[in-house]
Amino acid sequence: MNVRSRWLMISVGLGVLLNPLNSSMISVAIARLQNVYHLDFTVVSWIIFSFYIASAIAQPVMGKASDLFGRKKIFLTGLVVAFVASLLAPLSPNFGWLIVFRIVQSIGTSMMVSVGMAIVRIHITEKQGTALSVMSIFLSGAAAIGPFIGGVLIHWWDWPTIFFVNIPFVVMSFLLAWRTIPKDEPSTSVALNMSFRKWFDLIDASGILLFTVGLVALLVGLLSAKSSGHVSFGHVIVGLIGLVALGAFVRHELKATSPFIPLRTFAKYPAMTWVNVEFILVNVLYYSLFFGLPSYLQMVRHVSEFHTGILMLSLGLCSLVASPIAGRWIDKSGPRPALLVSGVLMTFGSVWIVTLNQTSPVISVCLALAAFGISNGLNNVGMQAALFKSSPKEIIGVASGLFMTSRYLGTILSSLLLGIVMGDKFSAGGFRLLGAILSVIALSLVFMSWRRRESGQLEES
Image (cartoon, rainbow, N blue to C red; front, side, top):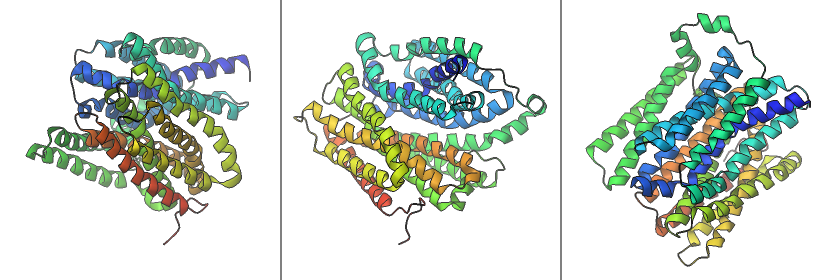
């Protein structure tokens, strides 16, 4: 690999890491934001919802946009958007504006993720496997150390620094990307001649709108009812609007020529569908702990952000260590044994949460973190391998897109679960209830992995 290719990888990597870094740093800041804005956990959890909903929509849309307008342009534009959002978010006059800038930040960082891997694939032709693995390290490494970085920054300089810390990454990435990413020639004639209506049809703007309205309305209805302690007529109406919009979304996607989420693919390939269902559950488990444990440590056990970040580091490190080991194991034995062990570890970690109480040593949470970290490393490789086994080669691109959508859905559902279980305030009892719910989900994953055939299809009863 020549020097120019290495600098290209660094420039892309510095931009790509911003999305997982910002999605993970916030886990340590939730308790502080509750105190600063005097809000309950249900409301503050929108700082998580907004980021993942925006990412789920922006990444496939920006991927299509890059094909028309050029990958370099989209990547550089994403850096500018992320810079502006990171600069303005700490200046937000209220929590509503913070959510707005958080959404803008998500869109900007998603623009880089959606085209970053494509830039590496296209412009680095030698040792491409090594290059892609390095990009994966940027992604997984940033997510792993995010809580630790967030904890250190908040402990010493308060919560605005988790936004300001993006600025040097953005500036370095922009300067390097401007010089190292070759100019690509997109289908300019197609892009210039395409009407707004055709562009909207291509990205399925109607489907995106229905999906967003339905998901947000349903979340608002559920979380508002939980926060107020009773179900009012208004809550029911908002929830029904969400359900109607999601129903209309399903109907629209089944008829759309270029659907945002190709639902017919799920029906056509049931083995692939089961893999995505499992992946949703895996992410519900992992992110419930990822976002729930820092708030539990800070609000119930009164652990500082700094020490919370150090404890959370064990989660990421275990995941990073387990991933290459999982790769070699899965190459020899297939994904089934690794996914089965992962389910058992998640069950152990969830049951361990149930046993925690006010007198339990804080360091004991590392057992749950280690179990979830190792299982995450196994799942990162195992679920991807199961997807490849269950998906026909001719639709592997679509399958990979659906796989990422499943990750975001699992993350959003984990935030919803936390909001419903915890309500306005984190408590030891609520955290144990969360552990009991996660134990049931983890046991269902063990059962699904046990009944898995090597093709990825669940065995028939």
